[in-house]
Length: 168
Image 1 (tube, rainbow, N blue to C red):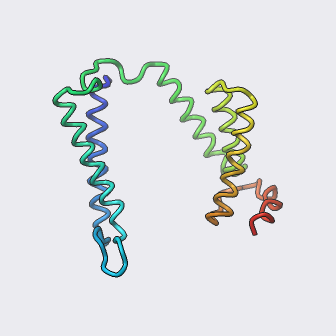
Image 2: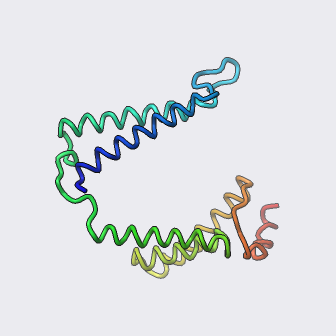
Image 3: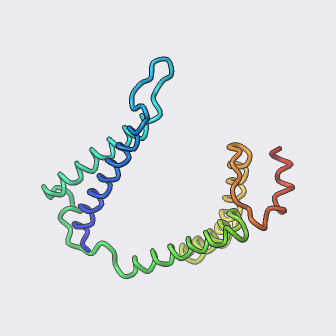
């Protein structure tokens, strides 16, 4: 497909998604100010979706007028190299999800980051190791400590017992 075609298709799909969210946000939720309470529970989903719908309609309008470089482009949207990279990324994310059930999210994330930063991004080992270790540790303390939302740890749960002492 060409860039021009994909731009129009994405604008139309996102416009439909916006409309669906707007409809869902009005299904028993208030999309206006509730006196004495503040904004209703559907305010943010509805009005953000409305803004997204307006943006999509502007993209469609510009596409028909041909005012942007993308709306006039006859280049391929994805080259074979792009398809290969996306395929590898999707496979790596699928393996991350599978590994989450066995070794937990934090260790799966660490392995994913090592693969993605070192193999795909060709970053140095120092940067790869620092980010691959720091990110799961930060997210552990953020989710478990600050938000009190436990993420899956699977068979690696006993390794986290000493870290719980810092939180609880």
